[in-house]
Length: 104
Image (cartoon, rainbow, N blue to C red; front, side):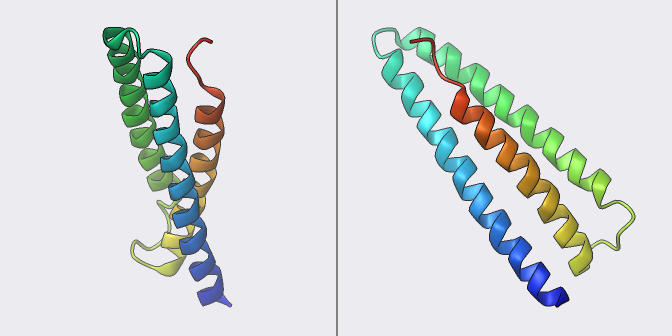
């Protein structure tokens, strides 16, 4: 049973990461399309987006380290806990990025 839970968390994390990356790339494309007439403004918007994403990744990594702190590093329990945190945070970030759009 433990192996099944671990395998499921690995798959779910990969799927959530894929969805987040696709959403992030789609947002970049929406920004470029929306600001196609003003490249400087598009670049400024993208600069903020990238800074936000880097800060979010740092927060995510700090949170999963905190959540899995008392679990033996490298164990399946540790990895499953880390995966669960990443899944939860990535899902929420994906929803946020889906709702974020340049002013139409």
